[in-house]
Amino acid sequence: MVGSFLDPVFSPLLALPSWLAILVISVVITTLTTIAYKYLTDQQRMKALKAEMKGYQKKVKELSKTDPKKAMKVQQEMMGKNMEIMKQSFKPTLYTLIPIIIIFGWLNAHMAYEPLLPGEPFTVTMQLQKGAAGEVTLDTIPELGLHRNDTWTKEVIDGVASWTLMGEEGTYQLAFTHASGASTAKEVVISSETGQYAPPFEKVKVAPFSAVTLSNEKIKPLEGFPLVGNWGWIGIYILFSVALSFGLRKALGVA
Image 1 (cartoon, rainbow, N blue to C red):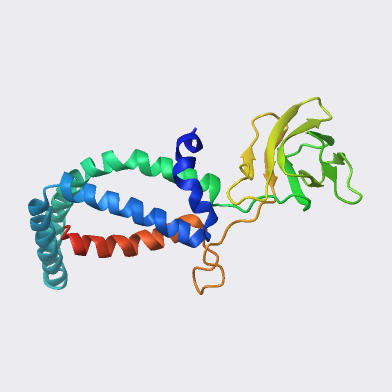
Image 2: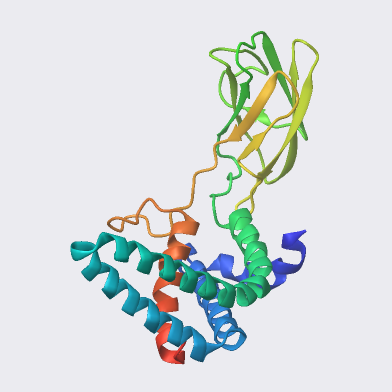
């Protein structure tokens, strides 16, 4: 549902390096939220409150050394000011929260993992509930190929059964059947296009199954960079948005 109306807007970004696409989205979201915050809050009151907070913080620091009881009283007054700041911030948050959640859903569905590539082997792992044993048989629609000497029926070992498969570009249904007769399914997307993949991890509510995992690799937008090289899209988004927010707030005079 999210992709149906966001894909025409954001899909062109998938042609860019992932870090650049995330930067563009960060710029859009941060700009909109900063403008909303500026015009949906009483900026004069916010500036006054923040100035008061700085004064309180200074008092607490001084009093904590000489009069801890008074320091506690000042801290309680600070809490009241913090509550007022939170109330001021509630309105812009209310307006921007749902659009941000929708955009985050799109990012997670398109920029969190690499696709499973045509003709390349990938692994499907079914985890079973604690204590479950027996055999699990895998069927695929349309038919996928087994890699090397793999077999369609697997004995559950240490609570898991896994298969290595490969196939051409397309969408496939995996059907898992346990020896008890219980069955469940999982969608798999094989594609050469960035951003095209099924959720690599899904919980399964049908006993004795527990969860199914595909071997999509996580996208690391700034791989190779110190400190942030292993971060996923959300960490890189936060990094960009914090830096952008600081600059925009200063440029627009937002409290």
